[in-house]
Length: 182
Image 1 (cartoon, rainbow, N blue to C red):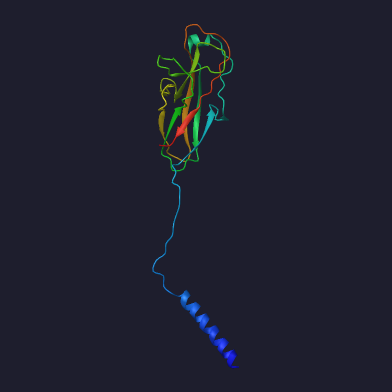
Image 2: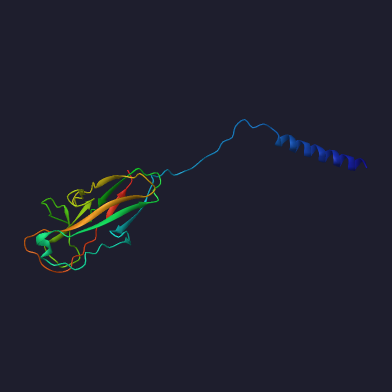
C-alpha cells in the first residue's frame, strides 16, 4: 500500500510540475513573417469594334485605289481586366517591331510577313489624328490611367502608303505591345 501511495504522490508531483511549467509566463515571442511585395497587374485582351474578343484585326480585301482617297482604319480596344492595385499602365511596342517611315520618323509598323509593298500600319490610342500615335521606333510608349477593376482603352490602326508606288499582295504584321505597371 505504501508503494501505491508513493506512486500516486510521484504521479501528482510530476503532473503538478508539468502544469506549473505550462502556466509559466513568457516574456517575449519571436515570429518571422515572409512575403514578396509585387506591383499590381491586369489581364490585357483585345476587342474588335463589335466588342468581340480577338487576337487578329483583319482589314479584309482592299484595293490599291483605296489608298489614294483615304487611309483605311480599324477601331479596336485594349481591355484591362482584373486590375489589382494598379493606377497606371504604360503600353509600348516591343523592340522587335519592324519600323518604317510613315511621316518620316519611323513611326509606322512595316509589313513583316506579306508581299505587298509600300504599305505600313500606324497604331493610335483613340482615333487617328485626334488621338496619340504610337511611334514604332520609340520604346517609351504611352501611359494610361487605370480607374477601375476594368479599364477600356480605345485604339485604332490605320493603313498608310509609305511610297508613291504601291504593290499589291498580302499585308501581315505582328505588333507585340508590352504592358508595364510603373
